[in-house]
Image (cartoon, rainbow over all chains, first blue to last red; front, side, top):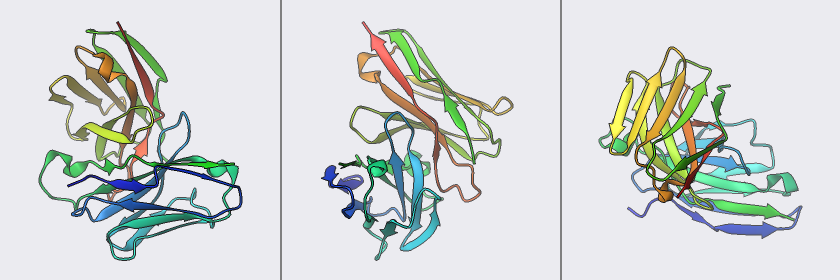
Length: 119
Length: 112
């Protein structure tokens, strides 16, 4: 178990460009979440998947954002036509199926995040 | 949506106890969590409590839940400089216990 892995760690892009981030969850976790965190704020929910199905999307997720989890394993988050307001830390988390064992079953394991800077 | 509030800053001396507070508006929480975030890092789960519990102790950490007042607290005993970080309370308030809603975070500063 290597934890939740996110790539890249940092991304600097020019306004108007497209960017894609990747998240590799803990292998036995069926749920995967994307959050966005701006400076001085708590993380805000963007979307989540159960296996390959995208079950919920926040109103924060505009049409320029799309997330996929094609085989129920890794996920990608793409932002098209980036804007300066998209600059933030993008966090991925995963959680196991409900009803399992272990103290962390009811928690969410977060990755280290991808810091996006749009210039 | 759910509102989760925390005080912004707390300063304590090394060796003292720290108490970080959190209030929320919706009483129908299922699970409540405390996360720690160090600079430039992701979120580390510290502890959690089910909504049908009043207290949980885990080594130096004590979580108290007052459902009537919709108040959650985290007490850190014998606070160390390594405890300096931002602490977030979070919970699930939807019926499927899926997405987390986070508080605004409390920055804990531990001084010598």
